[in-house]
Image (cartoon, rainbow, N blue to C red; front, side, top):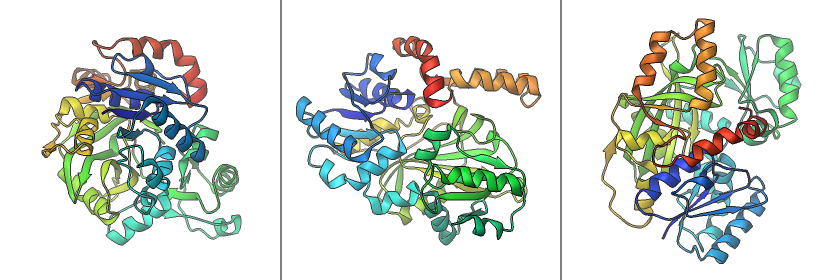
Length: 385
């Protein structure tokens, strides 16, 4: 019995290490050059033509299961498009794998951010003011205060084409321009206009959980101190575990409403204008800094595996005060912050003291770090960093 991990970047590497340290075999499946293939905790590595085309992804997975006799292995998606593919083809996949990903009726509420915000409003969870104009004419009718963000409701096609999470529009002319550009990469009715809550990444918080039957069997809250890029962060670069139980309480309301099971990270930003935590995003998969759960006492990847194979999983809550860093992006972000006066040297040096885990480097598994250094030009072109 083992695990099939789709995506071999630092997300997938962290899953392989978590499971491998418990003696669980892992198979990395990827359509890119990935660092996880070099890990001592990766048992097999399989390259496939693509993981972006849904039907081809499912066919490739089933082919791998047949060839390698992986029946009953647990599936771990690391990208949103894989979550969507697994949920829509769950019945087909469960003939071969254990599939923690819920069906589409659950996943759709996280997959499309417009669905997320509409449900959050019904549940009484605060969100940023958001509009979903259908046409340029609808755009002209919006009563917005600038600046605003222009972002996709479904991010995959938009992100792969632009390498951006959102665009900042400072006036009506920029809003028209970015709306037109966004419609080239997003589907009908999938371009959102959203108010920009003041503050940088330090105002962003996450509730991280392993959720089952209305309970958070594993839970950890975190604060995103630094991110890349600084305003519309595609990813965290330095995160610290904290103790803010209200984040979990809010998240439970959303996950219960969609009948969720599995790992999830729900992102919030605290609005300095009214003090409210406002829901930004719901990730129903492993998230970038999920490896922080290990040193914090909540090994999310292993908890999910143990539950999937029928073991008893006791409730655990993560310890506060521990840091996770992605050095390859945090270093340039920190240099910009220090030289620009947005980051104080004292705060930066303190954050280094609190680092409990780095996204790639591990003293017992150094080859992935060397591979990532060699691959930096490839990653810069492929992913924009």
